[in-house]
Length: 392
Ligand SMILES: Cc1ncc(C[n+]2csc(CCOP(=O)(O)OP(=O)(O)O)c2C)c(N)n1
Ligand SMILES: [Mg+2]
Image (cartoon, rainbow, N blue to C red; front, side, top):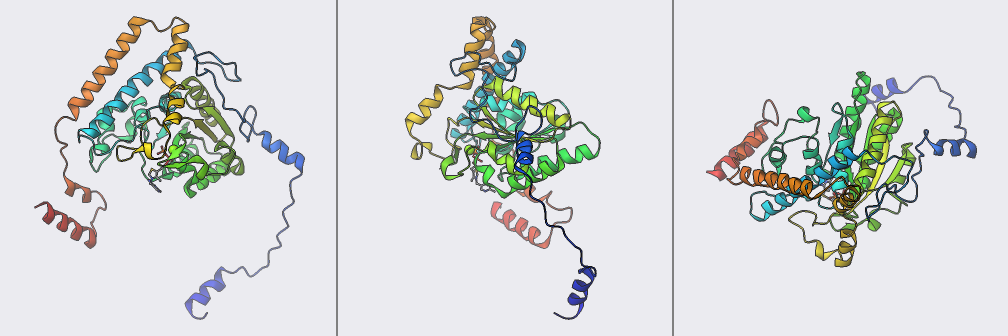
């Protein structure tokens, strides 16, 4: 090596040898103390998922309290309305009104329980699967569907409800969430970021990097893994040999919590506790919610090719909406009239979504090029010309 590069390397090489002490290994007592984690949250998750309401709708005693009756009613209402929205969106793909829609049917306890635990100043970082979570956070349902109609833009203002764009590249949103949360803390703001990801997304390098940074910086982030058993057709057993996905936190110094992901009360309580801990300076939490996607991956997928009917039926018995409904009915909080009113509210929303998507979307494919760079490159200009010619 000679010339300018050699000079550069010489400048970067320290002239003085620095003596580096060999790192001392922690004692087993130190390790045990670290694994015990912060008060109330162990680094290692429990082996059974935390539950507050059983599949039969019975209350379950736990370290966390069952949310109050009005909170449970609100969670139930949002799940019923959210499910109707989701069913309508799936139907619209069959009519060609939506280009694509990834359903979250069966995952409503996460879709509602988690975002409902956020405070107004917090941020949500959703994926393509999480339209019901976006709606739960307050974004208009029609605006939420803009992207799925094939438009180039998001349809909603991320700053209005503090909802980041629904992320299609897996796990990239984990890094966005950590960056935003850490920056907010540096600015002295009281903001927590909740990032939603799937079981498959935990295999991405981005997730490992996000957990590392969140742990080192003690960033106020809550990672919620919706483990629905599959990454498209790939089952969890082919995705990881870890005892649970919540265990993936320990190597990064991030406490892991395992929760029944079809129990809206439990998801709400766990995420609420994690948000409160993060806001109080307690650092990040990795929550794994065990759930199931009842529909296919998207309208472009046939789930019968890789899932047995019996498996789907078993999860139908653990339906998140039914179980909360049973609990509320047993407590005399949800009568016939209230159910009717709720069904009417859900139907009204579905009607509004149908009307709003009835005409052809007003799409301008060339607008795709308008906001890439302030000054488009020669390559982009050529691509734009080519598309314009094709469109005629
Ligand atoms: C970086 C990246 N690789 C591959 C894909 C293609 N892809 C789209 S969805 C998906 C499966 C994701 O599974 P999971 O994280 O479990 O989320 P789920 O769809 O079950 O909600 C894959 C591989 C992608 N979107 N991004
Ligand atoms: Mg999955």
